[in-house]
Length: 293
Image 1 (cartoon, rainbow, N blue to C red):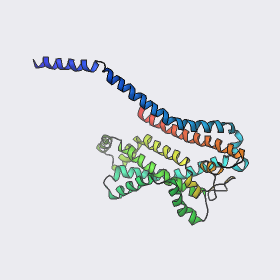
Image 2 (cartoon, rainbow, N blue to C red):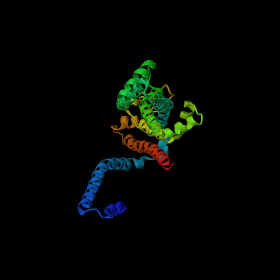
Image 3 (cartoon, rainbow, N blue to C red):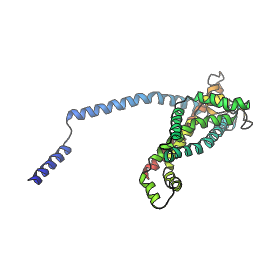
Image 4 (cartoon, rainbow, N blue to C red):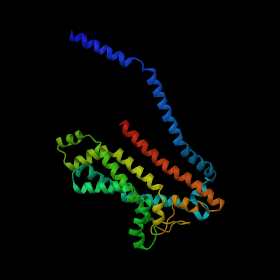
């Protein structure tokens, strides 16, 4: 008798699940989807309009000459080189420090007071305005060395990149199942071997994504570089001299009455967006590859 009742209940549940939804719920679902798509379209309108304006005004200025000439010769080759140089300096300073800090927070400092303090400071740094970071770098390097330089700009970008790398590294390591750590320990692996050979190796895609996102953010920063690297119309004389960058070029020349300089600003905007877009696409591909695995 009980078996009969259970089978009856199973059939009723199956029938209920397979039956079509009431018309009111179907209409409500379509209505909510339409509202969601509508607001998404409204949010995309200003973004697409900005991208279209930049593309229309700047595409005519893309020529081979502008990539190999300096700003003084109506090119932005020195700004591209300066941006790459300062982002590379920032990455050199922040990536090892950020990854090691993230490993410490995730694997060795879960309940440590020092780790909690570092985590608290890192969370604060993520919300600090970039102009404040520029003033900090100015006081640490420019004021001491008595000169603007690419090193000062790279240091400012490193401060901006550091919290992003630390937090993404920590979260990537926390996503690794505890069973992998236990399996390594069961095979005789030490804490150090388990962390660096098993956990960190497995979390490399997530860590790489965080690094690429930090690089993309640093490449588009303007305020810190105004206080640290300043600007140069010609090619930089070295790492200890004022250095041009793409964001500061746009900032300095936007109101220039010269039509050639105005055209250069729009073309530079396209190149800067293209660089950031390429880094973002690479990070998305890394995430996708991680999900596939």
